[in-house]
Length: 177
Image 1: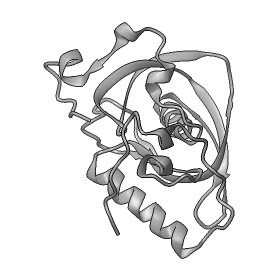
Image 2: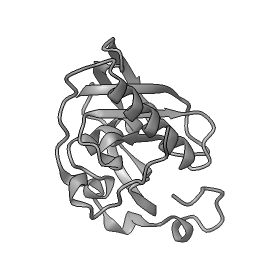
Image 3: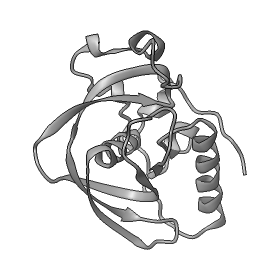
Image 4: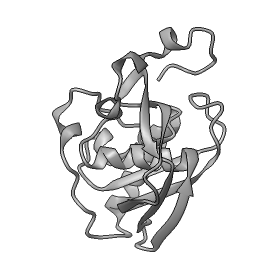
């Protein structure tokens, strides 16, 4: 369909709370998901949320196979997740480096729950119900934060752990966001 411009940090609409999807399996929803997929793939993203392309709906997609932006990450199955509900399984948090298509060229260390239960629906209205851990849990939390107007720098606890990718990792093959 189309590669859409990704809104960048500072854009007021990225701070808004997205609305639930009311109707599934519609041409409009399928077109939105295709645009999100095209945009995510074009930018080598691990995921993308509808608000990042200017659509205020509770829709995220994510999936990681071989990704130059996350060369050491575990694989995460491609998922379309609509109207998600996240429930941490434990209080254990783990720090990890994150980047974002809406915060290009930067990375920061963000604490996230290590184990997570999430529910939601696919684009046809079929239920999704998963218990995940590790990088999969991190990606889901990051993408779903966008639905509540939260960008990962808002979760960084020590700004000494936030900077430009090429400065933080000068000898790395990690691609610039």
